[in-house]
Length: 389
Image 1 (spheres, rainbow, N blue to C red):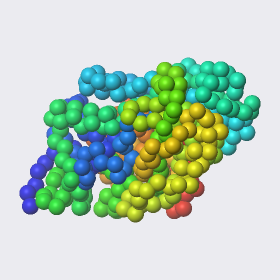
Image 2: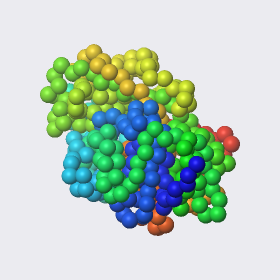
Image 3: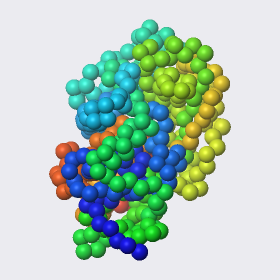
Image 4: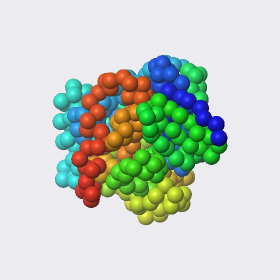
């Protein structure tokens, strides 16, 4: 076996890892290698599809403040890529007055951060978007800068630009072991040992398997989720510019998109899937989840519901508090990790840039303590779990 040396090795080249490799290469961190165990752009994880929601609306002021950085970072990538990756459609959060989640945390958080939004009662929502059919007890928040990130395009742009800035990216290269010694990280593939000054783990649902090589195990739960695409007979009424991205803030929580790309209207239930592992998951749709979603759409968006064109599965990797993990692996000051908690794609480029900065020895531009891998809930033996956002 041979041995090669890098300034940074990134394991996992989905949405977060591709961004980390790109930003490390772009901002002069040195020689960077990205390793992906499957083919680039594979559909076994969490990152690939034609759209993900981006929004300023969030349940805590800390996340709302971070959304400013998320939008700004995507703008920098768009300028480098010379292509649009974010589409602004406006965004609606809505719920019944007695919902399990409520819109008040989102309203208060946006107010505290000075984000523009508008409060609407049910009548106001339906006057603006007559596609909705809502009861009088429903109210909502409209945020004009909500929209979508073109997810697969963004991943491909990060990887293309990473290579343009000098990164080496390898697909179909599983990592068999990781060792940390004498200030260096050593990674073994099936053909060689690779050495790095720093390491970034962005392996999603495979994260704990890799952390095990370092004697670390975190209380992460993997669930199999899905999104469905519906034939929409009046597609023009649900096109961007006439229809927003939306989130129903109740239990269950549902969310959806305008008609965009090659498929019809896209919608899903958030965090409603069964517990799996990265290896035991399947690719067949959960028909009960499909029925729950279709019933909701038939009630609130009757004009959107035609036959299901396609249902795609994906994985969520969930810390107990559903906050991200972004920072150093416990006990290792040159190994960094991230877990997206099923809502990270809007922040993907910002997270990648932050990880790249940490790996290059730079001070982060945001407070990362709430996202630390050694925060108390991640050290508890049997932590309480709360997955609503």
